[in-house]
Structure formats: C-alpha cells, structure tokens
Image 1 (cartoon, helix red, strand yellow):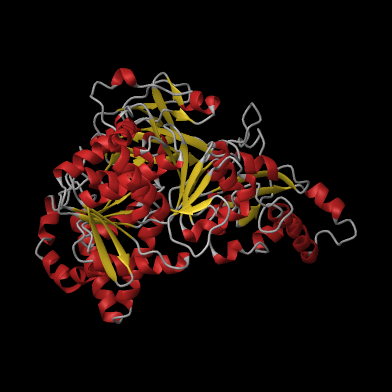
Image 2: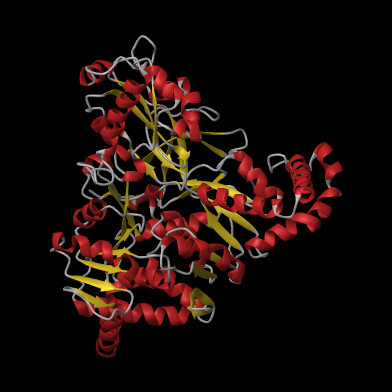
Length: 640
C-alpha cells in the first residue's frame, strides 16, 4: 500500500535524476566526489561523475535490469556507493541500501528476501557476509562486486565488467537508456530503507524520488551550502541523515563530498577519520552523539597531555565561554557583554589550536539521530565549532527540524523546515496547544509512501495524511521544537538507530526464570534490562542449593544470564534478534510491576515511563563498571 501525497505536490517533476542533471549542468567542472587512493586524494567533477553513472546505469540495463527492479547496495562509504545509487536510478530501479553493521546472517537475509531484491551491489569487504547466505538467495540473479577480484563465484561479476557492457550499450542505444531515467516520476519509489519494526522484523521505509528532492529543498530553508564548501561523510551512507544532508544537499549546491578512506578492518577505517578530517579540512560535518563524544574525548586528552596548567586554562576558558554564550540565542546579551574582551584571548591561546584537529576550516557540525545533550552542545559552541542539534527520522526522509547558525537554542531541536506542517497530539489524537507535550506528528512532501509489504504498519504510522513519529516533544514559546524522547517504547542507541523492544521482551519473558522484563536504551552505549526474577522457579531449579546464600544467588543469576545468552553468540536461539539490542547488563528488582504500585495499567500492560522513573537510579547504576557486573551487591541482595 502506498500513501499518496500527490494532492500536496503542486510542483513540476523533480526526481533525484532531475536534481543530478541540473547540478551537472550548473556545476560541470566543480569537484563533486573526493576519495583517497593510497596516499593521494582523487577528485571527480560533476561531469566525470555523470560519465561513470551513465556507464554503470547502462551496464545494469544491459545485464537485464528492468524498470522497477530492486537492487540492494551493501558497501562502506565511498564514491562507488554514490555513483552506484545514481546508476540504479538511471537504470529505472529502486535501491535497497543496507547497513554494513549487519553482521548476523538472518538480518541481511530477511532484508534481501523481504525486499524482493533481484540484483545486488556489494563491496569486497562485505562480500563474505553474502557468500555465507548466497544459497538462500536464489532469486538474486547477479551479485555485482564493486572491486576487481582475482576470481568470482557463481552469479558474481565485477562492476568493471558491468561498466564495459554499459559503454557498449551507450554507443548503440544512448537515447533509449536515458529515456528510462527520464520516465521516472515524483511518486516512483527511489529507495526501500529498512528500520526496526514493532516486532523482531524490521520495516522497509519506501521513500520516493519526490520525498528526497522535497527534503533537500526543505533542509535548504534552514541553511545554505556554498559551491566552495566541502564535507567529509563519516556516517554510513545508508543512514538516511547522511544520505540526504551528506550528499544530496551538497550535490544540489555544486559542493564537494569526501568519504572516509576504507581500511582493511572497521577499526582501521575509524582510525582514518581524524586523519582524513585534517586532510580534507571540511567546512561542515555531520555527526551523531557517539561521534561527538569521541571527538570531545580526543580533544580533552590532547589538552591534558600538555600539562596541568594547560588543562586549568582550558577549563577556565570553557567557563567564560559557557557564561557568555548562554543557550545560544541570548549569546553576549545583558551582563554577558562584559565577558566579550576575554573571548579572543582564550580563542587565540586555546580554542583555535583545538579546531586545527578538525581541519581548521570547520564552521559548524549538524547532529542527527539521537538527542545530543545540552552540555555537549555547550562544549562545542564554546570552542568555536558549534554542533547544531537536528531532528528527523527515516519515515520523513529524514529532516524535520534543526538548529542553524541563524537561529539556535541549546536543548532544542531547532526550527521546523518549510514547507512542513507539524502538530503535537495526545494519545487520543487530539491536537495540543503550544507548550504542551505529546506525540510529534507531521505532514509534508518528505513523508514516506509507506512500509514495503506491511500495510498494517503503514496504516498505523500514516493516518489522515499525517506521519505519527512515535516521538515525544513540544513547541516552545519561541517556536522551536523540543524533542524529549520516546512517545512510544523505542530503544534509541547512541548512534540514533531505533528498535522496538517488545519482541525481545516478550521472548525473554517466556524464560521460566524471568517474571517481568523491561529493556532500556536512551542514546546509551548499550542496552540494559530491569528484570523481576521468578523466584519460585529459581528456588525449584536450585532446590538442592542453600537458598539465601551468596553462592546460590550467583547460580540463580547465571540462570537468568543464560536465558539471555541463548539469543546471542553461539546460543541455541542466536540470530533471533540483532545482538546490539540484547541487554549487556541487568538489574534484578525486589518487587514485581503491579497495578497496586502503579507500574501496570488497567489493561495489564507495563507503564514503561513509570518503571523507568521509579528505577532511574538502578538504570544509571547499570552504566557503571560495578553495575555492569551481574554479581553486583544490589542483584545479590534481591536473591538473598
């Protein structure tokens, strides 16, 4: 089922192909793509990029790709990812971008089977994952390897071969090739991007060509990108935020996009990020909280390495900047103007040198995904590299709002893009006034077409022309959006990925040793769990032990741990769920969730918010070394 916003679309046809062609016409000799090969950076102009895209797209057609076919793309961030997606569009096909974080065979397998993928582009580094499950993918006709390899297995060929086929097709039928891309309309799907669903199965978000081009236009109402600007994309390119803001916005403005040099291992690639930043000297960076924390940690370590005096001076400089900046919107106003003469001094002595670690040309960063805490925003603003918090989700392609250089207030998610209608509604769907907290609901051309082969989820998310985001927030007195967290029960990792916990909770709740369980992850390094142990079953299992002793309590904890570990690693049920969402630490609670203590409602559903609030200290404890040790004193006391 496709949700149609055609009545809102009064514009002429503008697909991603149209957007790319316009950019090539306007900026033919501007550098579009930058990629490091060996020790040198290779620049590719818009015109050169189009030549490659034409050859690849025509090659896909020569290979048999028909209009509307689904082609999966699994690769690290690189030029070939971007040219590969554009080639897919020119061939008339739909891209199914896949995350390189998907290690579990069942995760990849589900997406490839559910999406009806018929062809696949895959990098050499990711090929081993596909070869493990290839025999379960008989419907995929060809696996196209982005690298040249010494040998290929069944149904595999190189992109070089495809490009040669394309070059030949272009000499024979170029107009026929181009006509396919030109025939694509605004409402035709461009991608099927998988995100987590309400059960263990992920959902495929259908984003149309107009969803993308509309969100590019909307985003540019918040900030502009000069043609001379550069960015280094450090987020995975399948990430919707990186997809739109990372390269389509830059593409539309004739600006340059660099990708991180791919290492032999993921760790090596991560180590290349700071090196590449210094080399590229980006003007704008995209980030998520996890990266922001890592950058800050590196900065503070560098300062400490210069000695106690430098560290004290740095902290003093931060305090002065914090006081002067306030929450951003009232920077330097009132009594704060008295601090203005001190700022150039601290900047020259400290902050300007810190900025060199990120290239020295960085104007600002934009944070997407999970919420970036206010203190972190204060820090980056103080050192002269503001990180403006934004908000969005894949179903909205994804940008809904962002703080900007022109208007920003720390602790908010900023200004809403235009044109976009945003409402705040209560649980019954009633519109709430400004300042009241409720579910964030939006309507605009950036709203997805629906979920692939999931009509029930589509109808739940898209109602009366609006997208119900599942996020809690309100509009403050200045008209800025404040996102508070989850309106619904979603786990949110530190990199912004979301996952519904119900499927895992229901499954683990079936363990004879777990009476009740609530998973928790709110932009945290790992998922944790609040568990009410089933003491009766534990006592029965450990009937021959000295119940109440520390030794027996540890054995009971082992049984609970084993119930969870059965779903990870080499456990009996491994692969049922993505392991990153299984709890890495758990707190055993002395009291069950009941109607009497207000933690279960009248329909016998656990009231997640009340549980999290009541046990906030235990949750915080789980993110300490002591709390992560399952034999911690609080857990032992519960079973003694």
